[in-house]
Length: 294
Image 1 (tube, rainbow, N blue to C red):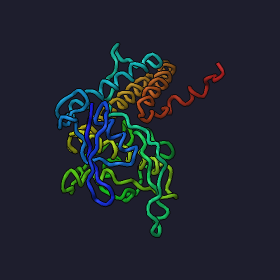
Image 2 (cartoon, rainbow, N blue to C red; image 1 turned 120 degrees about the horizontal axis):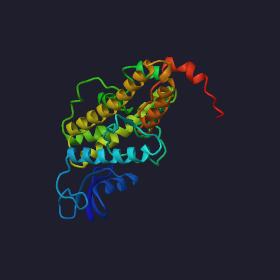
Image 3 (cartoon, helix red, strand yellow; image 1 turned 90 degrees about the vertical axis):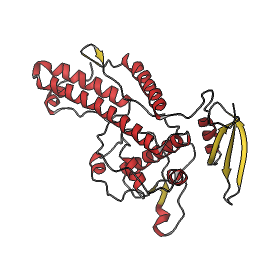
Image 4 (cartoon, one colour; image 1 turned 30 degrees about the horizontal axis):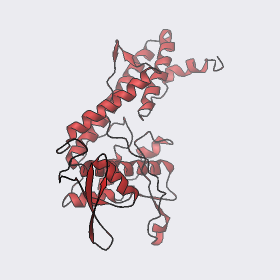
């Protein structure tokens, strides 16, 4: 399908052009690769059609497609690590679209005093943050430069419990919000790697939100999708944690079963980017007796 798009150059002049693409998302990705920030992309007939689908895409269709994608990933994993309870599969969390890994190298921010030590955080997809988790729990309140980034960073790790908080306000219109989302996230050369990864994942969430809004949905709908995804992931991890606790509490006769469940549960959690369950203290002596050469 043919799409027309509009953009502005650094001198403020508006330009329009067209290209053939399978969807509006493909147009945005192609323009982003060229360093162009489109302010409008429409189908040749003047609508916001996305490929063969007409009309405004709603958050409900996003979430339905995401759940289907998550179930496909889970089905592929079941052959390696079965995840059953009472003869039924545990429900898998819904997923927002996978983020395309960036190809451009990080660019330093303008040098102004200590700003010379800052670098642009290249976006990462949501994932478990490796390293000292205690640092994330006591991260400084001014780690991010904007309230929007601070809010979105709460959703960086899949499966982590998120406390309720007021959603960011203060944007005059959609254009102002998109400008804030398109602004880079910075990190300092001397920051802990855990903070750098947190900022890179937050940069990825900002880009995901911008694409969501440019696709025709609202900021409120995106926040709702974030909450739904996080709750589903956290629920899945909580179920695994409860089941492991039940097996561990059964005593020595269930140690082998509990240890096997711990391995399989963590394998599936990691496959979805959810941080794993720690080995219970009650199983440490049992694990120490295993012959790793067998």
